[in-house]
Length: 208
Ligand code: PRP
Ligand code: URA
Image (cartoon, rainbow, N blue to C red; front, side, top):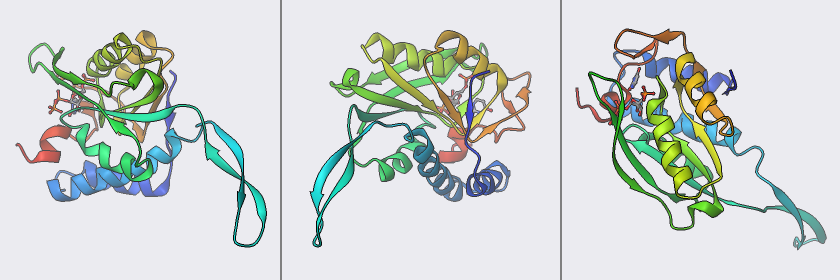
């Protein structure tokens, strides 16, 4: 299994609060945003840089600037929306696309209903965000769409992943690195992640 589990005491602490049933949507949203910011730090760790000559008020020196591709963030609706602001706080110049997709409650298969990407998406590194990687169907569908539009450089960032979903994405898209805050145990008979945190979209928006 090819996966980057981002280990940090702050992430582990915040995720534990998110998992708890009594955590209300207001706190769930805030914590998801905070964890997304912390994870974006790790996801962007290998961005290419170049040296530039600058002048401080004291003297000339050599600094560093980002080079290469700009970034795009693409949340999978709905729950992915909760991760966008955290990433944008760290990478404010990123453009944002959207992919609408929900799991059919009976078949657990993803159903796509919306896709709008920045026109220059193929020139960007695209970070696809969705808190839950369960069967991997939604992530694979989103990554398929993005590749069909010419994007070559894609990363997937989630909060909680199931081994089944990691395997599915690794097999379908071996070129796409996955970052998660936690790798959980398995999927239950309803394809929910165990121990997981329940339905991320409902908990984020208070729809249940
Ligand atoms: C959830 C979650 C993922 C998907 C993961 O979305 O946010 O998109 O399920 O499951 P999978 O890996 O088995 O595809 P959901 O379908 O509940 O839609 P919502 O965000 O609109 O609630
Ligand atoms: N979608 C969720 O929101 N939670 C899960 O555990 C699985 C899919």
